[in-house]
Image 1 (cartoon, rainbow, N blue to C red):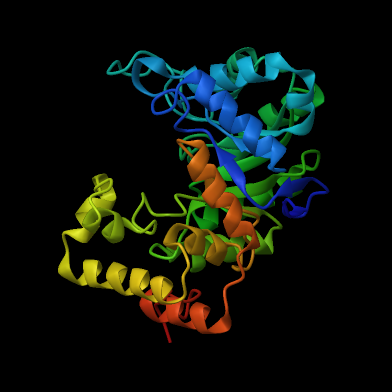
Image 2: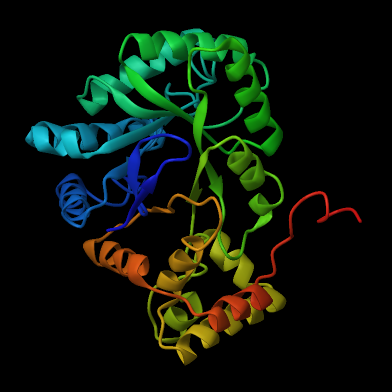
Length: 331
């Protein structure tokens, strides 16, 4: 496994991040523990989760599965850089959130971190992340709550997720003015070959303020994982966002060109999509969310995959990025 610094921090993290969103809903606890064992054995030390994972009536279940894995061995927690997220309503599904039971008020931050610590069976969280922007809560209040948690030893670093560039800047500037906390150290954003809008402002803002970029959905919901080839061979058919995209003839032709290019070079599409992200400026490492041990093995191969300049150029031709702002939308 290869390692890098997380943004401007001294924290060393693996270039692949183990995403755990499937633990519980898609993958049972014993298999989830086996995947975490295999990830740690392979050198992946960065594990990502969220308090809402488990979804529906099972919100929090994923954190519980990870907590049970930590309880098996002190070595597990010691070797893991643990990241979790908060923002969403943790109450019963379909019931409106009770006041102050969601978003980023100081009260909910305090409540959410204590609940996550209990489920995760740990004394501290390495990277505590805001899952979404809260337009109603000022960053002065948010950073005051975070300062307290850091002083209490409950969290070490803070990250954002799904923040636009201007909110990364706003949060960072207010943190700098207040002093104390280091401010945001990472941003999780939707970023992959087929979805490159983050290159316009989010990634430049993250680089400017020293945040590591953690792309989620690196295969665009399976679209970049050889979906047409699997469909033709009678394998798992596309669903959700990938199926909707393939229903468009122009988009289908684009994905077909992508698969044909990689087939020509003998490279698995999913591995190429991850390897491409690892070449992108500012990217710390993509989040991979394996449902099976085999999917984890495929992701691990991507770390060692070197894409030639010819392939990189061809990928840019198939999936042209928007370019940086303001040039992307102005002269």
